[in-house]
Structure formats: structure tokens, C-alpha cells
Amino acid sequence: MKTTLSMLVCSALVLSAGPAATAEEISAAEKALFASNHLAMLTPPTTLRYSFRKSGSLEAGFDDKVAVSLRAQGDGSCCAATAEFLSGSRRLALPEVESAQGNPVILYFLERDIREMQRLTKGQANYFRKRIRMAVYQGATINEVSVSYRGRNVAARQIVVAPYVDDPLRARFETLAGKRYVFTLSDQVPGSVVDIRSQVDGTAVPLLLEEMTLEGVARQP
Image (cartoon, rainbow, N blue to C red; front, side):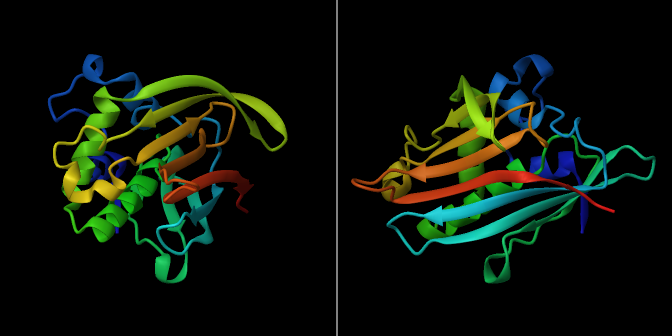
């Protein structure tokens, strides 16, 4: 199954405030997450590799892997992307993204998270997509931070959104209403995504914590 990045974004409902949004209306968080060329440093064919860990007191955790494979398009430009997102029964079937510039792993992570919210709450996936979209558009905070990548410190931006804190319907899924998403991005790492985390705090330990962290990049033969 193939799709363009714009089609994937539209289906996920997380790129912009709406179909009529202009460049001036896109928030700084939207631009950083969904309208930047995260793949500029990369030369295809290559694969971005991430670790994925789920933990917390809500249910059993696990450790797994994510791989995003990038190849040149027909004209030699970067990139067409395919993903192996988790494995076995947890594997998420995802479309190929043609003409990718933004790192599709951001949308893949969010799509899985939205499906998990639907599973855990019996709510509607489109509702959760809408809340995330609006939180990125008008409720995100951005901080400049320094993070470690492969033994060196790099400058990064940390974008935090909490889509359900002021949700008028939060009583329907109160247990997870405090969920926040933290995106750590750096132009100094391959693919620009250092890590992505979704978290619901508990009393002593997190109720739910899912974190995807960049392990490195591998050139394909």
C-alpha cells in the first residue's frame, strides 16, 4: 500500500488547523513536527533504528524495535519510506510514504498511540486525532534543551503537548486524561527525532509510559 506524506498526514489529522490553514497559521510546534525537512542529512538507501519500550502499572510492558527504511525515489531524490513498527502480534501495519521530508516515525508513533487510546477507552480514534491536532496547533510548549546522543551532547528542542487536560469530555476517559506527549528533536541527529514519549503519571510510578528512542542509522548496501 502506497501513499504520499500529505495523504498520511491528512488521514491522521495532525498536520494543520484545517484545510484552509496557511503558512502563517501553522504554529511553531506544527512546523517543527510536521513541516520540516527532518531527512535532509540522510543519503538513501538507509535505515533509521529506534528502540521502543512500554512500561507502567496499567498493564504489562515490553521492549521492541522500530525501523524506518528510506530509499531514493525514481528521480534519485530522498525519500520513500517504509517502516517495521514493532514485531509479532504488536506489529503495526503502516503505509509506504512517498516523497517524505518530515520523518514519518512521528506520525507512526502517534497513529499507534491513537489506536491504543481507542483500545483502552473504547473512544473514537478520530476524536483523539482531533485533540492531538488542536493541542499541537495551539497548546504546545517548546523548550531548548541539551540531550545525549551516542556519547555526545547535542542541542535539541523539546515539544510538550497535553491534549486531554482541558478536554470537556475527559470524564469519559479520566484515567488517561493526564496523558502528555514529549517530542525531542535535534538537527544534529539522523532523522531529527531523538525520542518521543507518551506518559500518564501515577502515584509512585507512571501509570503508562511509552518511549521510542533513536539508536542510530545504518547505511544499506
